[in-house]
Image: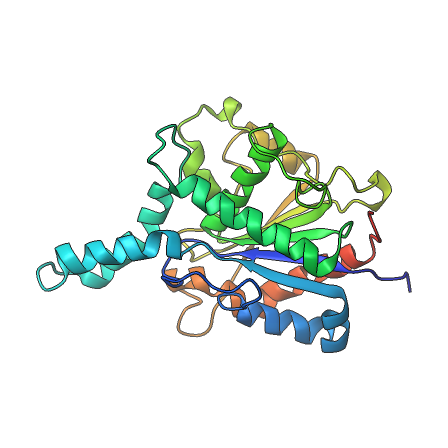
Length: 286
């Protein structure tokens, strides 16, 4: 068996109510089911020895403001409160997270600051020069795509190859809604991020490096390759692969609640474990 080396895994949540307070650097909350499932599949001792796992948590940036509005303007007056809360904690997240030149528009840079801090902390956990795997749920896929795009185009920088995503071996998006944000552009003007892991020698790169999973009943999960020419080129080159799956349990697998079913689903956990194990065999990139 080839020797195995340490791997860093960064997990980011998507839209929805995740909590109104920032969490600790090493806390595992929204990804706990996936963490436990992968640890069991890979083997607890092997996982603990080789996998550095950290969450990118950003929900509190928006949730307190959203909840204040619900309490002040809607509670006790409006009907369909569950539906309104769904809109507020999901669609409002997507509407608020966008690049703005207005200095008072704080959400985009604040969310990216959380990504930056989490990746920097993860490097202290695993050490420099290890392959990075990104797991991004829902709007988290759009956030990571934007963050990497900004890095690749000189809009932001970081002090190390790891923090510049140059050791990123792969990314898995699930329940991804990136296509929603492409419709302002003609198909032939839609661009995708390039393979970030430029410090990984070609012979050790993972292909595909981007896997996308969407549940057939998840209204917020959408295929990428049809969104524009940039994503089609990634798909045609074999760098992107997409899969329809059925997640959740008997109560959620057949309806829109499946958007949150990926974390516990065995059919999803299997390819995630496969990518992590493949990254273990890449070796040191220091």
